Amino acid sequence: MTIIPPAIYEPIYKAIGDIFSFDDLNIVVYKCLGERRINDYANEDDPRWQVARDVIDGIERDEATKFFLSEILFDKRCDAYLTSLIYKVDPQIKAAERNLKARVEALDEDLRKTKDALTDDAARRSLKDSSATFANFSVAVGVLQIYKFLHDALHLLQVRRFVDLRDAVETMDDDHAAEGRLRDFQNGMRECVVLARKAAARLPIDVRPQETLWIDKLDQRAVEELRTAIDGMDIPSARIALRIAAKLIESESSRLNGLIFLSASNLPLKALAAGLENAANIAPLVKLPLLSTANSANLLAATLQSHVVEHGLWQDVDDTLWAVDVLLTEAGNDILKILSEEWLNAEAVVLNLVRPSADEVWALDILKYGERMKEALSGAIELAATPAVTEADLTDAIDGLILRYGDFRYEVRFRFFVIDQLLMSDCEEIVKLRTSVNAVLEALGHE
Image (cartoon, rainbow, N blue to C red; front, top):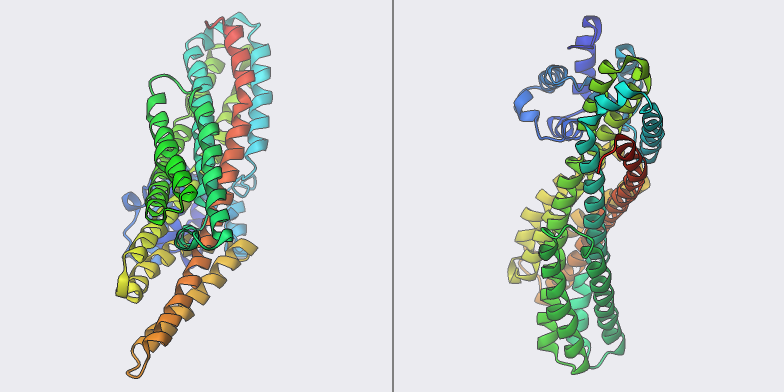
């Protein structure tokens, strides 16, 4: 069903095309649908107006127009003219809700009203078939919370600058400060192991061994081997232990992110809504509270989906920059070549995520450090092409370039950390729904 009036169909797709590129709309569609569907809608090589029109046609077919336009409204680049057109589609459309807590509170209140409505025999009978969906939701939320906790524990280690820790290994035998930095990191891993074991013990038995496997390895191969190496001032062993730690932290963090993405995406909120809508048709005396709960569940599903997608996009950026990190450690004399190719590609991916919020402080900081990195890279490349350049001057320029890359890298990683914490807060809010969901289950007589 199409909801955009014919009179503003052309103006709105042209206004969107003037502001949003194919890559921009790719992200918007991904947030709306939870799937990368833009290639089903549009051709990247077509003119921007054509792309925008084809995307709108696809979104209309998929009945996601309101969610799509709310994401467009949320983007800081959406100007007054485009905003006025969107309000002509529906004056009630608001910028995409980023306050998931408000969505959870609304659904929690409606679930309590639904529970009260189950004094009606028809309502109770109509919802009986959905009791398994309510139970699955309660279990799934608990698993999501544990995965997010494990990921968060690793991410606190992940934000450390491993380049500084690697330098500390090389000087720990005659630099007490370097030894202290390594010891602090080793103790941080010890704490992570303790907290992770406690959380993993609450997972369902069928998925628990996968988590205890990496926790054991982090404990035995990273924590204990690094502690032994520091105690004995064994630099080669410390190098190995630090490399094992870095590899585990990166790989398991990325894997857990995938599990979080999957778990949050699969929360049966839409199934809850469908069950409530069906029940409302069967029990007309309590139709309004049931439909209100269904609407709240759908709105929460859309908000959570947008947050999960954003988290996944920043994880992708972090993984891309990690690949650059690895290349740099093995680059030798090819550092300039790698940075001129790989980093520029990575920067383009970052900019796609920064542009919608380009006037915010965090975005301006990333752009600032990106420009400094560009200047340092350009200067180093120019210096390397100078016939009379000395090895000392070139080494100094490359050292400065690596520092600028580190600044940019850390700023991007910190933004991912913030997004990570926001999703953790989302999970904590969603967990609160278990009480009201379990109350509905009890009223339904679910065992």
